[in-house]
Length: 146
Image: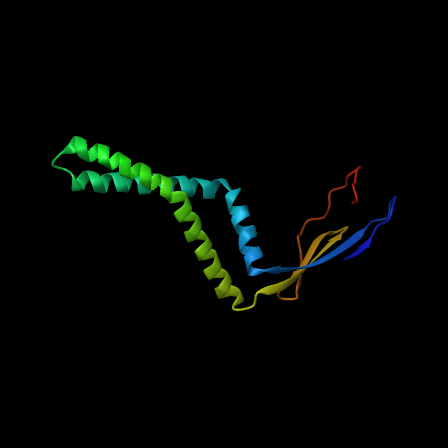
């Protein structure tokens, strides 16, 4: 880690370098997805659709006795709703691993460099190219430097 800090009108540069694996990338992606309202909405919609289809299937199967079909269907729908989150979590992780394997192949360890500069955040990762966040820092009267 390389860090240059100064006071007053002078600026600072900070350079951090770390290694990450495909598991780290998948874990970070899962945490990011868990914070998104759209993803939570898809999960709720999936759970409700699965529960409804389960109820409908059981109801249709027991159509000669509609009351019994509705009650058994509700029980099956509740079980389906209870099992959905775990099943969905495993399915999403499996898809993320498949995508990571497709993109990165068998490589499992990657190097990432992050530089905090007066003109913004710069990142160098996997390809070796240096990318800018495209945003300059906003002027602030208070800056905390760890």
